[in-house]
Image (cartoon, rainbow, N blue to C red; front, top):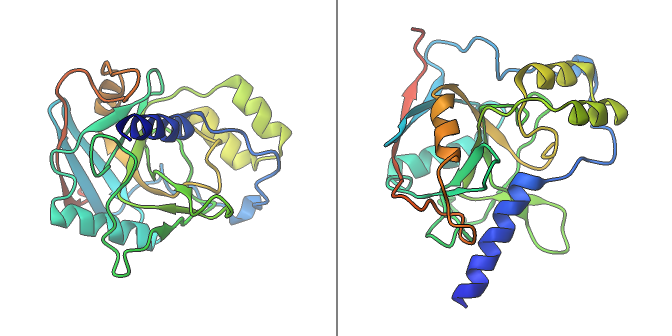
Length: 241
């Protein structure tokens, strides 16, 4: 049983980091897109501060675009669920996953009133650009294409744009506004378009995300081989420096 759990977590994490290009257009009109991840954030906007032994990561929360996801994340934070959580790392992916119930990584916590997983909240305004904070989604069941999430999430590090990805995006007629943003900011985009809920954006500490993603990890479990945890996550508000 333990071996099966390890295999399961490997499959889950590989799925997160390898994704595939959608074989059709996004179907989103250029004029309907308002890319908000790199706009000036407002004073008092909700944020979360992640404290680690390698430094602090600050991210703004997009409650308007992903209300259920953000509300659930805040409830988990307030309960102390994320304190002293380990991370899972896929080598060379420049990203990490956290928020699992235990070190198998195969399940997360649900603090919804009905204990049901949260339906993914995707929007044409948020993408997996560098610095994006996203849920770790999974299919509701093998016979459904609906994606749901729990307490697990991942943060995209500083990933340079790929000319091959740009060519594919243009081939599949992604809106020029989105293609241009990918060229400028890079990321794990577009393999998760329409599947995974982006609910936050790192505005300070992206270099810490990069350092965490470089930690040596066990090839099977994806756990760091040196002691490292998310010490705590606290809610705050955005203040211009």
